[in-house]
Each structure stands twice: as structure tokens, then as C-alpha cells.
Length: 314
Image (cartoon, rainbow, N blue to C red; front, side, top):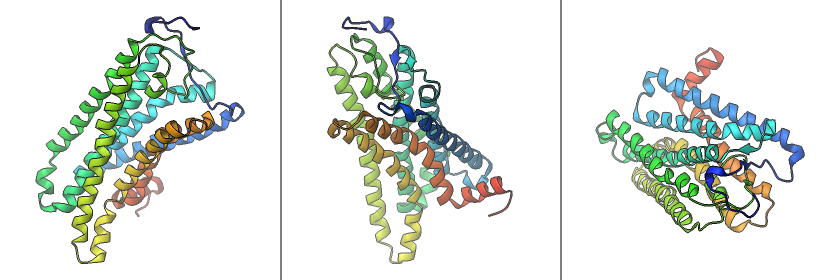
């Protein structure tokens, strides 16, 4: 690699990194990641199966939950090949094209998840603030249009990233900081001018994560204002309880993301494994916890799950 620039078509493979400084503990990391993968894949698959089989769950709120589960499966399968290869098989080489494909899907599913959480907040807003119009506003056709629009938006945002990277020359050691390919990691490797990449990266983050989180916050402000107008504390708590699962999903998605961003900006002197662990939390914990949260908080899902696992009614 040396100091000579390489065109992307003739680049040597990238080298993935496990946990720098903790090489002797990699097998424990494999056990942890394997457990997270199993819980995530099985949990989200069960959510999809239950929603399909349970007729009472064929309504907008659970259609959006199905989209969230499908997306979480996508996140898990996007990181699965290289993470397990790195920690289990110690295979740390990945070609440029494969790295671009993995980077695309990881960021695509992240943007889709943000969009799904936004339309789920809209679902809660309509259900609480305009309950009489719920059935007419959130029809099956409208739900489908909202889901498709989130997917199209995410694709349009992420698609330019690999193309912008492919145009750049690479002349540094192509060692990545994680066991998978992320755009903030890859953008540090080219020796050409990355101004356009930085500007576009900032633009898509603000126009997706920034805008979505602001609109989710606005929806809950409107929901809270509507709930506070109700005289009975019991009714207030009952209504707010329908939002708990979604609020938890929002927190476990956005809090680790903010943590990773803050660590990258203000924790530059922290050991590299700290950054790696935080990125693992960001990508691995939400897909694992989302089905757990919705299984615990949704009576219909909990009852059907107990029936499947225990063969008894709950």
C-alpha cells in the first residue's frame, strides 16, 4: 500500500479490526456477539410470525412493528458475515467492493430504522390526538405508501456514498477500526480531497437522523399536551402506556448513536476498543432489545409468545 495512490479498482483488501489491545479476549467477544445475533434473529422472526398469525394484530401499529423487525433482521445480517469471520475465524480481509456493499446496507438499514420510528410516532400521534380519524388516516394503502417512502428516501441518501468513495485515490494503510465497514471509518483512508464526502455525509445525517428525531420529539410534545388535557390520572397513564414501547425503541436507537458521535468528537484519547465497543452497542443492541420490549409490553404478542413457547394460554 505504501504512499502510492491506488485506484479503487486495484486496491488491496481492507483489513478489519477486532478489539485492539484485547486480542486474547476475542473468543469471549464471539460468544457475546453470537448470543446477540441469536436473540436478535429469533426474536424478530417470532415477532413477524406472531403478527402474521394473530388476526387482532393486523392493524397499522403492528404493520409498522413488522417493518421494524424486518429492518432489524437486515441490520443483523449486514454485520453478521464479517463480525463472525473476524472474531471467530480470524479472517480479517475484505475486498473494496464487498466493503462498499456492506457499508451501503449497514447505513441503509440505519436510515430506514430512523424513518420507521418516525412513522410509528405519527401512528401514536393520530391514535391519541385524533382517534376518530385513525382508521381513515392510516389505511392499509397509506401505511404501504409511508413504508415505501421511507425505503426510497433511505436508498437515495445512501446510494451516493460508495460512488463518492470509489472516485478517490487510496494511499494509506487500509486498516479499518471495526469488524465491519462504516462510512466514517472509510472516509479517513483516501489521500484525495474528501470535502464533498464530508459535506454530503453531514447533509444526510442532518436531513435524516436530525429531522426525524426533531419530528419525533414534536409528536410527543403534541401527544403530551393532548394527554394533559384529560382530567383522570388513570386515563392519562393508560394512554401513555401505549407509547412506552415506541419511546424505548427511540431511546435505544438514538442514545447509542449520540454516544458514538460524542466519543468520536470528544473521546479521541480513549482506547480504540472503547470506540469499537460503543459502535457494537449501536449496531447490535437495538435489534436485540426491540423484540424483547414489544414482547413484554404488548399483551397480544406476549400471550401468543407464551402459547408458542410453553404450549399454554397466558
